[in-house]
Length: 479
Image (cartoon, rainbow, N blue to C red; front, side):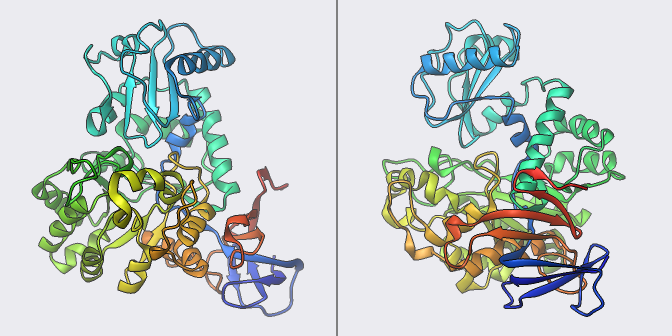
């Protein structure tokens, strides 16, 4: 059905558009239907530049540690969560979103297995009962990065029914915030059967692009070769940790000492790049610190131009990338994907850890504009809610929780919205999305508010995929 949408505002300056058969088409009569949008802003829907969809779903099956300060508060929260969800005495409870991790032994008196996770997702601890359950060393204290992620992978997956319901809830939240595509930012082998279960139940209403580590790539491609709405988009490697925990790898020390730690050598990164190039697979590289970015850029420089074009490299987070590195990324054909909500949620921590000069450069999107490096914005969900417009607002306003402003790297609202839409589609190599133009897929959003005047007060009112309304607010559209 050919539908005309009129009396709206587009970034192109036009005030109407038309859809038919799941595509945008020229605005030419006759029209089967007309809809007056009463002056609302309309954007292309958001391809997800970087997040972890299943981890977000599983977070609904975890106790919330936001604002908890003491071990007793955490133990009480775990008990309340277990009671509310009917969990047995031996069931492990994860307490997510801890801003501070308690002393390692402070929860050992609890008989229930407990796992406390830092909000960054890069560190956590397990009480004595959890260590016994997961067969971790008794003297394991606060674990970080690789050691922590290895321990987390030992946690048993919840029952299929619980995961299924949590996934539907997470997916609905992504749709309500305007996503047209979700990312599985690191597809672990333990997640393969979960997605196979979800696919068997036809649960994926939103397309998902998954990125396993190189050692799981071939198996993932084999197992999901014929999956509907689920693609293996490429590979993901980790080169360092997080700046708020002082584990991001820096070229010069944090305030008070220490530079963090790289998790891969340049030779290992080069091997991963060539492995990806041999398969024509995109490569995402987690690099928070400029030291990690140095390693990845040096590895890219060792490749041929053809190899670099085959892996379409993306530096994920790029929080502390320097201007000279951004210029090098432009020459090497690498994209950047920034996490600007760090300014709001951890900007004050970065001031303490990095000093004013470096903290003010977190997610340097203005440098990327100046160097003509394509960049996207993301929320790294579940670290932050799946709200792309919050990412855009943080890139524009660059205000910390305490009110400090990092204006040096601020960008305009148009540039932020382009990063969420057209450039995000480019990151995936999706040339049929990201713009409202004839021939492209009719994935679009109707907004509440004016993103050019007050982006922080703007939110998604309706989400359309292939020309069909899939949700209004957080409610599914009637079919």
